[in-house]
Image (cartoon, rainbow, N blue to C red; front, side, top):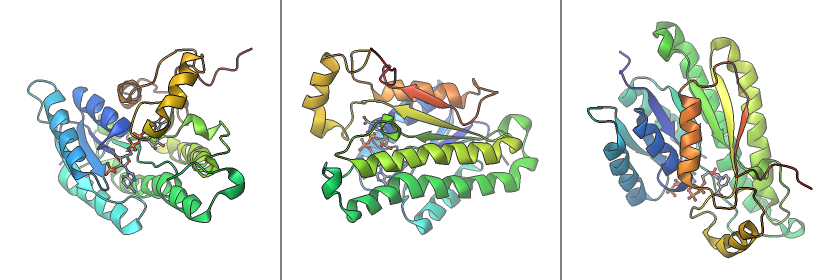
Length: 266
Ligand code: NAP
């Protein structure tokens, strides 16, 4: 039995961009599963906000699930929970990600930080997408047509293309995630499963808090044509557009949510 409301799983949905995405989806009528790893209170707060944001009369589920997505067995637990409690998944948002614990020049970068970032930012979305796609493919035939077009949205970064030599591991992980999008987009299109990359710019969250002053200055100097910080709400709105089938003849597409940062200027 497939529930009425569409359901989205947002990895790292407790705070920051993930929370913005969860809230925007809940407001648009989606059920949400908010995954988190350590900050339970933040995740519970997000859930309360999602419940309050639902359209009047909606009984779309808002669920919480703790899992470290860098671990295979925890990814498996997470997906089992989603399918058991939600019945079906319409949208996987691979959002969870981490920055290096310290910004370190490329010539001193450590393997420890590299391995950590690859495990969370790259390996986790690759294998979560793989496992989800296999679940989808096994059941697509049972579903009504409007539910048989699930999607994946990968939250990468301008760092997928911008070389920052004081956090090379982060840039490599996001460049890799960009290829993950293209690979799964190419492989899954024939089944009606589309995969997108959403590339945020400088977004005000706890991740960017340690470098807030630097970015404040750069933005004021015109680093981004749109001279302001991005917000989790900006990213959430873009996710909803993709989730609502707006781009019905596009897959593997990159959507920049970066205030125009990517524009080459002279
Ligand atoms: P954030 O505020 O630090 O939030 C990170 C989220 O990821 C939290 O919900 C955290 O859960 C979760 N998380 C971290 N490791 C996890 C793991 N192993 N398993 C499950 N969840 C995990 O970061 P953010 O700024 O919102 O960034 C979200 C995504 O956007 C990341 O992929 C980041 O690379 C990307 N991004 C951010 C910016 C930016 O300017 N902020 C720009 C471009 C791209 P807990 O709350 O439980 O710790």
